[in-house]
Length: 248
Image (cartoon, rainbow, N blue to C red):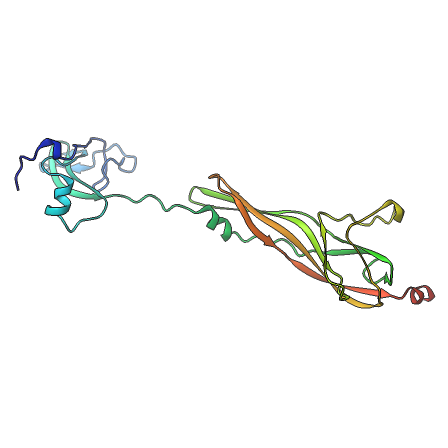
């Protein structure tokens, strides 16, 4: 192999004089400033590294060491000024990038099933009397997760209460938190957009579903919607004929 390669074609010489461990040029040797190599005469010294001197990286990859095609560099390794070896140092891949969306999707967030309240009470409904429905609680739920340097916060916020009264009339949607009926106030002084009137006496199974909008934010500026969570519950409703109730 010729050693008089034109300087313009050679790789620039890189010199590292800081202490390091073999195979990791320029590292701090675990934070120790103690000598980290031994010369042939037994004295201790510091590792340092120099780049290619007489060949180019192209020659190394194509002619001298064609079997080594990984990303990385060839360096001369010295202990102080004593040459130790010529070696290949593979490029250390960066830490795996954490996808904040995947991390957020992995978070398990479980709002409680709704507790349905009614007025009249569930066992005292009357035919043709407007009944109020509301959810006992209307609170959001939040959970966080961290992987590497990425943190995400996943939140579920209630948007609507969907009530199927169970009498075959079909479900209806009540947007936003529903007011609870206040028995200390006159009926004419209160109103609700979440009501239903049963037209036949009987025992019905009402289903309540709260629709939660799920979204996430992160410490890397990424966020977005994650769909909805819709926990539900059932409640037994007894509807009486008004005459029967009065006669009782």
